[in-house]
Image (cartoon, rainbow, N blue to C red; front, side, top):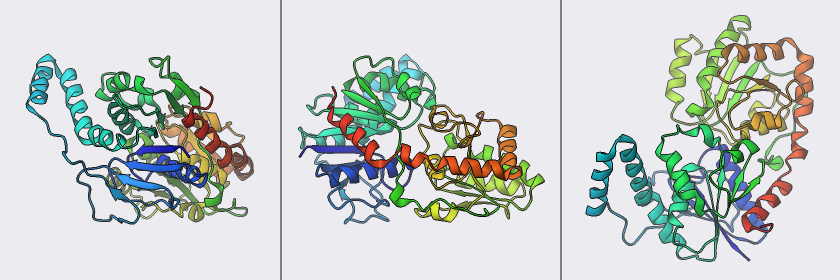
Length: 402
């Protein structure tokens, strides 16, 4: 059976990581030789099929919470170093201007920390198909595979057009190295259409799936007066907008609370914002919880305030358990691809605090609308069945239609 290698940042947190762990499990269950390479974090928090091999290639990982039964470590015999030639090239780059210098520094960093150990590992498996997901793993994988014979593809899990500014090193490195990929997987047509510089790359549009087996049944009955969100606490989620809109709502409906579940670098900042707005007893940032769906299924609504998404896994899961959903029509196109406004959810403009506040208020004041959205949202389960989506992913990875 064919060998397939996924390249990811980690299996510790994140909607994309959770989805891809399930895809890896499905492939392993079908008998494929399945490996997941982790660039940064050897901690595995998602349940993995016993046949999936998980390997961390970070040369000096933090082993505080490391479980060797869940993940093995790959160490290069000779870890790369910045040599005299590299230093000379960096000096030349700095002499050419700030943008050239930033590109050279980032490229060297990615080569030494990710691409070099990736290449060393992949050389052992020349017949394996390699599929990377998310920008840094994608660039590192394409760098590593320049002289390797493997079939290689990448998957975009976000809105690449707005992820970085035009002059960013990552934008330039995409254009330099992504041509190595024979094919690519996108969640939306908007994501796909960004890559005009890859005319020869086979492009697939495959949305996320709903993991029914891990979700509770949709709730029916009176809902708690709580507004919820569960996501990675990053800038692109624009959670400060949600907190601000909730502060406006709190003035009208002081008995409602806000609960955000997740981990990430914005956690402290969000707590500071909540305290500054006097909402410490009404708005809460909870730790990420694998059982979050059971905890929020009877909440009043799910609200996503993102500026950029592929297709939000949190949004799909909220819809699947029947939560009335309010989502920003964010860059990437995933929300508008899945939500028909006032039919199975509410769509509001990005970065519009007033619109977000009014949408939440509308659901509170119109229980019949909330019930309608809940009833229709659940239909997403059938539309995005795991068996159908995983088979589409497998066909794309194997290149069966190329």
